[in-house]
Amino acid sequence: MNTKYGSPYLYPGLDMVRVNLQIKEERNKKRQITFEQALDATMLVLNEKNATNYSIEDVKGRSRKRELVEIRSCAGYILYSRNIGTLKSIGRFFGGRDHSTVINGNQNWANLMDCYPVYRRATNKILSMID
Image 1 (tube, rainbow, N blue to C red):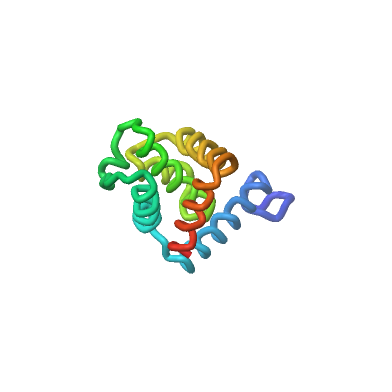
Image 2 (image 1 turned 120 degrees about the vertical axis):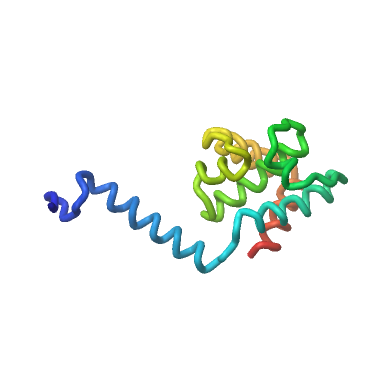
């Protein structure tokens, strides 16, 4: 049943959400970048920067070590900024975390990039590896 807006949905905004999700899915099909590929690139660059050698299980774990939090925040920032995943799916990928944790990590990473050029260079290096 159509409403006065010409959409089968009750609110006209829902139709736009559906269109935006279709656009996001089409972009993802073109890129074919997986969460694992983005995480691998992030770990490669940040493990080199921090002179550490963490595994994927360490990154997905519950540890709050600064280096691990940086890797999670950077990978989450890249995944979300490139429209590869939703906040909820990124949180689930990183060990069942909440979407608000991903938002906080994205904001923290953006602040680090604004304040410290080394973080901006690391992010650009990772983006050049995935694109």
